[in-house]
Amino acid sequence: MQEKSVDYEQLRRNAAAARLRAFETLHYSGGGHFGGVLSATEIVTVLYSSILRIDAKDPKWPDRDYFLLSKGHGAVGLAAVLSQLGLIDEEYLRSYKAFDSSLGWHTTKKMPWIEHPTGSLGHGLSVAVGIALGKRLDHRESRVFVLLGDGECDEGSVWEAAMSASKYKLDGLIAIVDRNFHNLDAPTEELMPLEPFEDKWRAFGWAVTTADGHDVQDLWNELSRMPIEPGKPSVLIAHTIKGKGVSFMENVSEWHSNKTSAEQFAVGVEDLKQRLGGD
Amino acid sequence: MDIQKTAESIRGKQGREVFQQVLVDVGESHRDVVVVGADSFRSIRGLDFENRFPERSFNVGIAEQNAVGIAAGLAVSGKLPIVLMFGFTIARALEQIRSSICYPDLNVRIITTATGLDMGEGGVTHHCTEDIGLLRTIANMTIVQPASGLETIFATHATVDQVCGPAYLRLTRQTFCEEAEEVVEDYYARGGEFRIGEPVVLREGTDIALIGSGLTVGLALKVADELKKEGVDASVLNVHTIKPLDERLLRELSQSIPRIITMEDHNVIGGLGEGVAGVVSRWGSARVLRVGINDVFCEIGKPAELCTHHGLCTDRVVELATSFLGG
Image (cartoon, rainbow over all chains, first blue to last red; front, side, top):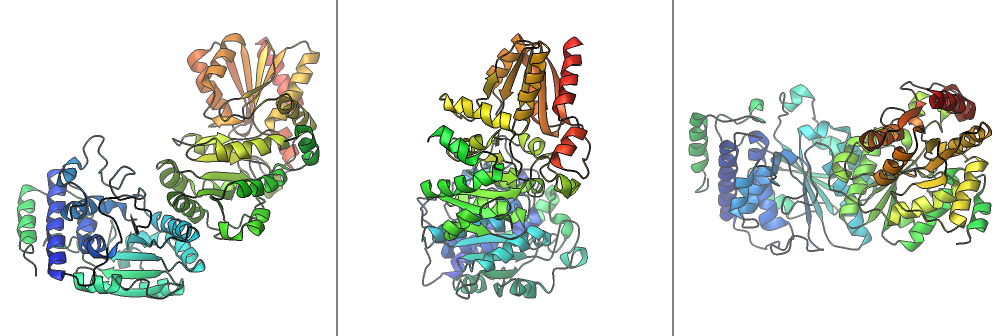
């Protein structure tokens, strides 16, 4: 449940610990989507700690807020946060990529807390619009949060969904874009420029705000005032660093998906442990 | 329902015209049914539903991927969404159908018209001769296609009520031939029921089995009439459920009848014929001839002209059947 007073230090510590868990899981399992997992850690931590109205004991509580990880390649990062917050068992991370596991590169329909499986990009926002419409028909208070990658916004279907969300005045729909400025092949502005990004969302009828996606206080301030404007869907463009926290990964497209050597792992763990006590 | 009276009231109507009223009936009886369209309410005949239930109708513009994605979300929220689409746009939204509806096994119904060669004069971009092939290969999907106006009513209700998970209902904007209307009506008038996955044997014969679905059931019946004049005793099957196919029935058929001809307004690759041949090759000794669009694009023409040109006409199939029986 949303709290009136928030312990930012605790949020920071939880995010740092979740990031280390995700990094270790990725390394020990032979690699994966480091870049986009590490960039989204604070966003997911703040959502599940203090923004989403959920019942820790009942993931299917009908009046819950919904969360969709449209950038499905952040699955292991989400799992790391959920385990850090005690919403799933820590052991669950060990199942990453194992045979018949519900935790792989991308979210699956069997993964705990997952409302809808994702992975191929550009699906999640439409699904979120559908959930928001259904909840409105049932006069439920549920809000729907959806986390998109910035590169994902190359997909035309994202903008089809964006148009429909404003047509239906879905102020219970909140999109967050992990704006880490990197696609798989190259930086976003080189590959397929998204800027002026905020203007695009505004032109599609959305209320827009921004935050430092690694500053938990800034994230909380913005996310706790959603919706920004009655009658409009909201988008938070969270400025992040791809590969955040691991010195040699930061802002390097090659670390979108890759594997770490023993030496690189040692450096990464050292980098991430420094942050465990807070900034 | 008074079968005869209902059949009379819809005789000569296009499949979609019949569907128009059924959709309203479904809306009346199912409060959880919502309809999503992509600028398709007028053409797929959803306007009556929209007028009756505006709050349960969502027209998202010419954006099929979004329409399907929204339907997935509506299903996640507990609704029973029906997506109205032009048949040829199935390919446009295929990945959403696969990954956002079929994989999570969501209760979504996709209903199309403008299927097969319905839009003959519209040209290749508006022809729809690959949809069954595309959707058959996706796990969890059920595929239904009615053979008459009356069966369109039953098929729509059954697709809504009898399927758990995703389903595709392939309707038409053509009218059904009189023979199909009468023979199919007779089956239901005698107490026959529409059950998903259970084909209907319309005629029993021992020399050859003629298998149709949708509009080609009428063709199969006409071919059977002609063959009868030549002393050939043909079975006619209405395979209204293309997926799942009734393996048991096809197995028995293929062990007792030496020749099978399938007919479809679809590419012979990927459609009904390949489905039937797949079952028969496992169990039977029968040989299977697949009649349909022979892996080409069909260009411009009225549906009947195109069908004739591509061999989906009585004379041509009778010829093929005769030589198939002799060979």
